[in-house]
Image (cartoon, rainbow, N blue to C red):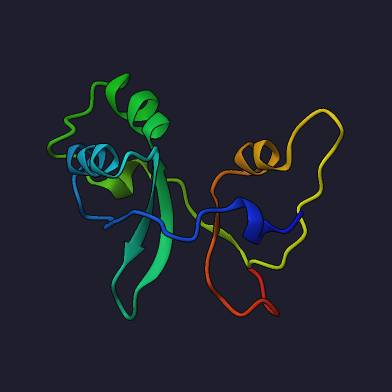
Amino acid sequence: MSAGRICTRIVATTAPTETVRAAARRMADHEVGTLVVVAEEPEPHAVGVITDRDITIRGVAEELDLDQTPVSHLMSSPVRMSVPGVFVKSNSTKSPSILVANFVRPTRQTPRDSSSSQ
């Protein structure tokens, strides 16, 4: 099965400088558990991801001030990207979507040329 059939093409984003609380609100607004962290300079590009688990385990449990802590402090980086045509291998006990979800975090699909991958 290809990554293009499994992954979401429309993603919610945040900036590395946004506060963790603002990122958590954005997750709630978009009903997602992951935001792609996008830096704008020199041109927009993904620099990491932050998940609801990152916020819970590395933010709340560590008693960080979520109104002052930037997303860059908790995000996972670097980002590993895939293109739609990449084949996702499965085994008989798990569906391909579960394998993608549990693969090396973070994994996101981007609408790049299918002849290249990072």
